[in-house]
Length: 134
Image 1 (tube, rainbow, N blue to C red):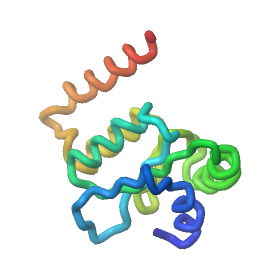
Image 2: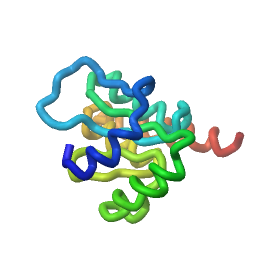
Image 3: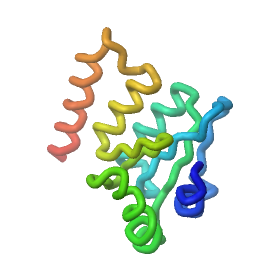
Image 4: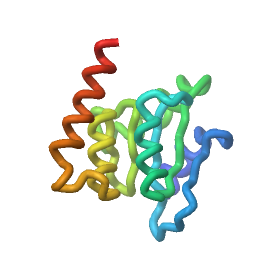
């Protein structure tokens, strides 16, 4: 990780929530940021685990005001002005919004292939409709 990003993000990664899948990757792990709950971050973490992609789970809880709003969000906003939770940091890419994050991981990790594109996106949209109806 870049030193600035490492100093800012790694302290918010709870040891109990730190999840690094077993595969060894030559590049820095993806960072998945969300609240310290399953919520909208869970599918992103599940996609990474399913594909054996190592990642860092940056969870925000009681420290949210200081860490997320005070440090991490302003820094990530320089790369993505729409930054919010959940988010993914992948090298120089900063992705936000739950559907966009899922689509990004699907393309990057090969779960959203051209052959399954319409079905995957239909399920994603239907899931959001169901969630919004609750």
